[in-house]
Image 1: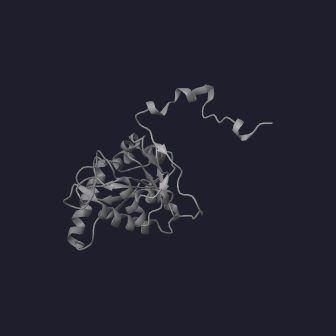
Image 2: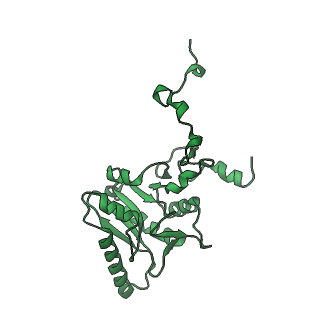
Image 3: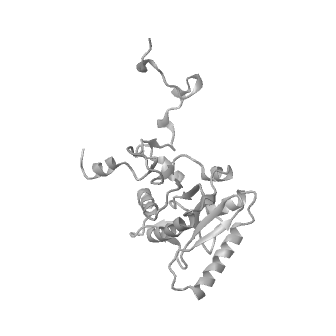
Length: 237
């Protein structure tokens, strides 16, 4: 009679487990179990470690995507890649930039006292892009910008089931629209998640590939992180 200890779990066929030594991979993550306890819907941000956002968008897994946009050059931003790759898109990097510039010019006259960043909508038919417009005269976003922008986006998503599921970039290691903290440096991923969550966002967040190189550090599949992390930071066992 077999016992649970006798059961051997296999991940691959042909004994490929012996060939897949994760220590040899430069890009890898060490995924830890997320928070446990009572399951409450709509109370977490799911972190998409190891997933390809562009492929998921093209596969139709999301109805809305959140990213950044500016009024100078978006040719290196993910918004340009999405507009180029989605078959039903009538937008290009040049037309996106032109629209952002026109919008900035309009609000500078009619709504100068309004607080930035504004959220621009680009309808690609199969997917809606909700783009945070980088404040005029700046080459970066701040966490404060991110918080205000996601408060607006949360309102745009409220009771709009046709805009769900939704996914966002992490805004870290961006080439076109960089994110900076109060010290002028790029904030932590935890700081970004805290800001999004605090603004009411409960969708998915795709991680910058640069963050896949921390295989020696445990990461969690969702935010808020388990309470044990805070206890460890405070010095508790």
